[in-house]
Image 1 (spheres, helix red, strand yellow):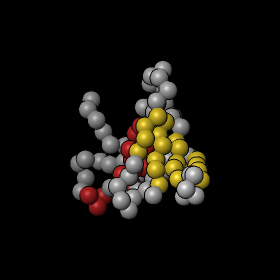
Image 2 (cartoon, helix red, strand yellow):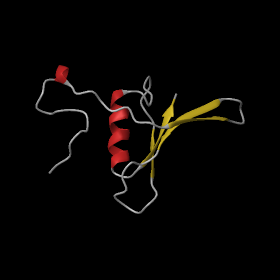
Image 3 (cartoon, one colour):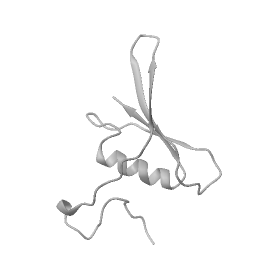
Image 4 (spheres, one colour):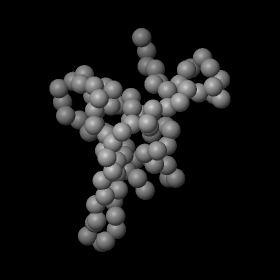
Length: 90
């Protein structure tokens, strides 16, 4: 069986999209030496398909965050396959 997006049905029209998952993670904020703030969300793996401890770093495009539909979909898919995800929020 090939790749399947977790929140879409490829046979339906775009306006019939199934609701995408809302991954649960923690928000982390760091104050950098120049006093700016770095904020990212960390999502732990749900599945454990492999033994490696891997973190996927995701940097959404301009104007997008961890709350964007395409990011939520990718995070959910990655978590289910045993990956931790760190999503930069800017």
